[in-house]
Structures are given as structure tokens and as C-alpha cells.
Length: 126
Image 1 (spheres, rainbow, N blue to C red):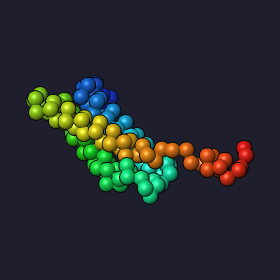
Image 2: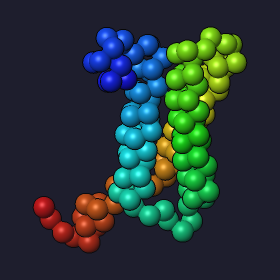
Image 3: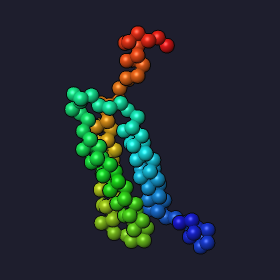
């Protein structure tokens, strides 16, 4: 896109801009947020039935496949106008949304105050 813009004077189409934006923000930034959340939040309790590592894996696959499919379909849409590509973009977008919601639904039980609350219960003062 930068070569075409600078050397040929052709700016990216809205589809190319959308593909680029989703590759960066969902494909890179959102996946980094999810990875850091897995590392940052406390481990689930042994009795925690809401947290399922398989669901985390499924959410990663939904986000990854949805983002890759959306980027490919939007790049193709910039040169090919077909309803099938529009539906592909919509379905891949839905996969991204479902993957993100599934991730945070699965992680929700791990988001709890542990550090200072546990220290206060042991009698530590701040």
C-alpha cells in the first residue's frame, strides 16, 4: 500500500484500510491483550468450573481464523465485487466477536482481588 501510494499516487481503498486496521488491532493488539491477561490474572481455583483451557484455545482459533479470513476477504473485495466476499467478511467478523466474548467469558472467574485482600487477612497493614 505504501509503495502504491508513494510511487503511483494510488491511495488504499476503504477495504484495504479496514483489512490493515483489523490485522493490527485485532490480530496483534487484541491477541497481545489476551495473552497478557492469561499471564497476569491469578490461576483459577481448583473448584472453578467456569474456567476451561479448551475454551481459551477455541477463542484463540476463532479470533485468529476470523481475522485472517476477514483480512483476506477485504483485500479481495478491493478488486472483486461479489456478494460471497461480503458474506465472508460478515462471518469472519462474527468469528472475531464470538472469540473475544468467549475469551473474556472464560477468563471472568480469574479476575478477582487476590494480592492485597489476602495480605490484609493475614494482618498486614499498608
